Length: 487
Image 1 (spheres, rainbow, N blue to C red):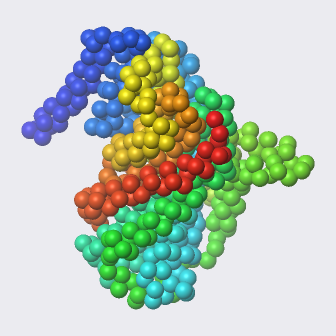
Image 2: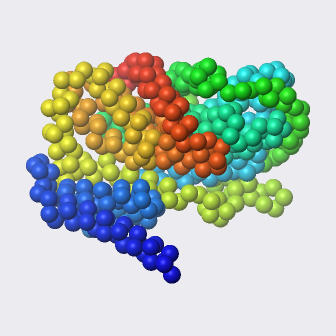
Image 3: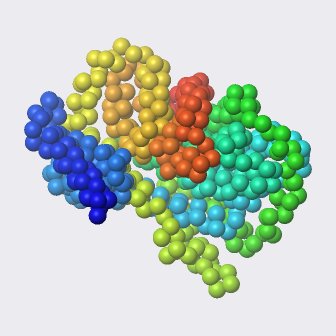
């Protein structure tokens, strides 16, 4: 009975905090010009929602957020839902989740991982084995979500530990388990494939500047940064963390390879279907260079991010083997992290809401910050933005940090010579760079939550990766993006 009373008291505190924040901004505090009373109401709703996201949950508070915005009167409900649940990013996220589930269920992702790990050249070569292991993580992370990749590779790592005698508490398992997350999450910054926050920023840039950012041009801008990030991680592991890798020399490669079953029709099918989706996403630019195929390239580009994976999901539901569909739609729907979908829908509307003249939020933020940053050079301003996005993502949901686009880009427009398109793309990449704290994203807590890695270990070396990726964004991605996306 006492336990129930404590739970109810905590819940009442959460309700009181949310209500207090709403009342404070919507009814008590004056609206500083040029922010309107409607804008203050939106700020109150947002502050209360952020509290609930951090303290309670991300699913139902996201739905409540949109409902309260609809009640506020700052925009019409139809316009609000067009920018949120009606946005193409919602079906893109759902269908991408489903495709990743099928790849994992068929064993395709595990087969890919084992191909790199079980090469004969790795036998008796611990550092070569680790490099190939993390290379497989990196390559899979480029085309899949970090959560799915982290779960699968952690299971493989546990197999390796059992075969070689490593235990929890030893430095190699500690570094290897959290390193799987670091590399998988880091890879999500370098391509838009199945990485929903990056195409979300593409939508913002198209609406704000009329610029179409293709998958291939984005990847071209960041692939060098990805290579530098991977090299930096391997050097950090070998020369700074310095785990004892001696037992890995005794790993029986053939025994591990024997756990991989022969190719199945299901694996071959999902491989062909997913490759077709990747081609539709990534290759319109290249196909457009071939004489006579300009029309095909234009059609491929017009499909956007959501249509190819949606069609792919339908095709997989049609295809049956042994009386069972390749994609069990009901099962996939049960396994989708719907809380993330609800949060994505609400975050998609933030840039729209913040930019409304009926709110004046962006205008007020710009007027307040401009005197402070007005003297910064474009390079210094971009560096500050990169550092803020990467560090903030360690502690706050990367989806929420991506929505900071709505605040940062208007400020970028006040900096003479600053390229807001490049800044926007660096926000898209940086909000995927979450390394040093378990709260950064869904996969961030897997190593610490499983007891393999200490939070202090993740924070210490994760911060080093933060500094490394910030430097690489500025030294490799920034100059290339300036060329690819002039303003």
